[in-house]
Image 1: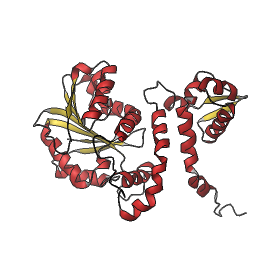
Image 2: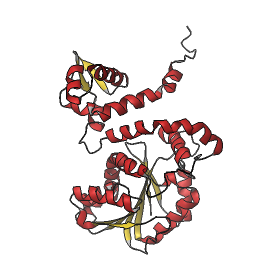
Image 3: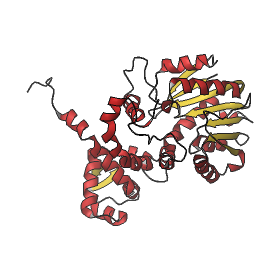
Image 4: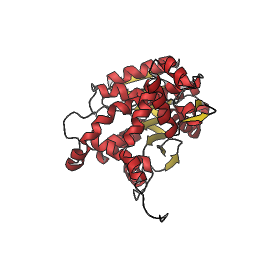
Length: 332
């Protein structure tokens, strides 16, 4: 066979991609990576530790080897470095909860053909309301994704040596930025603006990190709540822009500009695509999630952020890659 001739292998892998989601989610739900890390290196030992059938343990191990998350050496299974870092429970950047969350979300993709036809959610049951149980699950599931990004942003901003600073986290969700940044700077104070049920989760996380005395919350909708005037040194807008349309993002950036002190910085963290929409892969495919769940959201181009921030009055904008699929944007 001509080596340049197309084969169906990759299309078969894509069409059965839900197998990977299922195997990863099931393994995470039974703490398999945590048990492997503790030394349960065979199917029978793993089954006993996880409380599952030996047949089920072997099937998941086979799948995880196929996915490159577990390796087999001399008859024993062990996590790869990637799995040990990001899938073992208790690690600060553990994504096991996210894997479980995405497994539970798979059935919603069945609606995608209709959503593509109509250009948005086909029912009124969107996630963009305060009392949607979706937020209770997703806020905690995605917190770990922001840990390395928040650390990188802190280094770029030199937060640890910034002395007394005030932070506004817009739609801060889990409170992970406040928890990390307040831990790095004992003189900093942070305010999170989000819906009441979400802020309750943030208070718990920040209290667990021992910095609750310098953390406050404003319960409200950031579309309609006033941000104040020249009140903050830093504002955070993490994983919010993708659920908003252009007009809403501009309106938020205008309010942020007014709320920052002279020389203050806006930090944006989001999945951003190239100006010609040729990449990167994850932000491109993430656009389907926004089409499925939001009325106006999408994955926006660097040029979009440049234009929106300029319209809001920011003069200096820079983009910084991260180890995650997200990009950091700094605007002053």
